[in-house]
Amino acid sequence: MNISIREKDRFKVIDTPEHKDITILGSTGSIGTSTLDLISRNPEKYSVKALTANSNVEALAKQAIAHNAEMAVIADQDKYSDLKEALHGHNIIAAAGSEALNEAADTSADWVMSSIVGAAGLKPTLTAIRRGATIALANKECLVCAGEFMMQQVEDCGATILPVDSEHNAIFQIFDFDEPEKIEKVTLTASGGPFWNKDIADMQYITPVEAIKHPNWSMGVKISVDSATMMNKGLELIEAYYMFPIEKEQLDIIIHPESIIHSMVSYIDGSVLAQLGTPDMRTPISYTLGWPHRMNAPSKKLDLTEIGQLNFIRPDKVKFPAINITREVLQKGGSAPTILNASNEIAVKAFLEGQIDFLDITKVVEKALDTIKIHQMTCLNDVHDVDENTRIVTGEIVEGLKK
Ligand code: NDP
Image 1: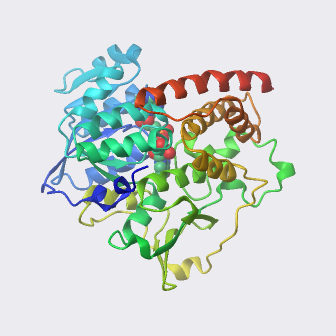
Image 2: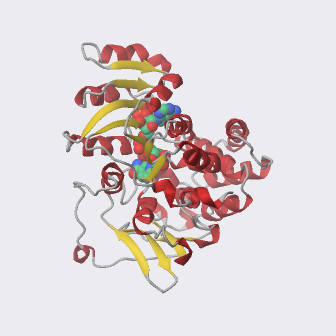
């Protein structure tokens, strides 16, 4: 990996217009709706170009009408006529399918929110990158499955990536990009999800309803399960590695159940800088939306006296094997992160559908990593091939475990 592509130029301050045209890929999700909430509070500053969803026509049409969008795209082709009907009488272009999704990403918006969940977000995000767009990146899976290629494209095409994930957004705010060599360590904080202090003996029978009930954050179902297995933190470790000029060994993870400190950067002089705030994604999203300027966000303001105490715990590696798995994957490199991401997506889906137990999720991922040969990847087509093959192999592994 060429170190230069992980340097501060990635976050170069562009000539930001007073008024921004916005596209949101995945507008009907948790991140998408929080983004639209911020936009609706500042109508004089933002206009909506394109909004996209997978299958939720009703929510998409409602958003497109409320925000006077130019274009609304539904990924599920079969939902095209429903969308057209829902937008009847409004001057909004309705479109469907993966090509239309790319068209939405290709529209000349000043700022693109990449908030589709999973590797499905990779193609449209790359389309936005290739036109040199400014992209607020929430979709961590695309960096995990295609990090090197994606960041190379960012450099080649002069795109700008702004980190939305609260931990990476925190690092972005406190990282000294002028002297990265003065940084000793970057610590990603983890809420630990709903089960960090649960006995492992009680974890086998965790239900999907329990797993998606996050104690601090309100999020989509997939990331909520990832948070419960702590795979989310593993994915974030990989995300941080690709985003910032930092070595793998300098990345640390600690559980901080209050989710007030969103990450920390330790410097060689013993100083540790942290970014704090109440757990509300509208704060990090606003930082990227207003960037390079701060803007008002409606998140509850932090009152430390109200919280009283902040706790920090080392993650239990037996209860949460995902962290070690992702560290090994980062060491192996090549196709390993792509296999990790795709197998995790399949395993989480199987758990949510009641096919496998909670503790099986990471076992399935481990099995996929052991079964599929890891090799070097030379182009993006390799990423697609590995992703596709992993989904097939993982499906077979799940089949063997089905309850
Ligand atoms: P949600 O599940 O709430 O929303 C996902 C969005 O993507 C929806 O708009 C959904 O459409 C759309 N979508 C799903 N599958 C596809 C597909 N195959 N093709 C096109 N569009 C699709 O997810 P979140 O908002 O929680 O998360 C989005 C991303 O942001 C994830 O990568 C997550 O890890 C990351 N993130 C989320 C945080 C959070 O607080 N939620 C925090 C940090 C990162 P539809 O509604 O029609 O299904």
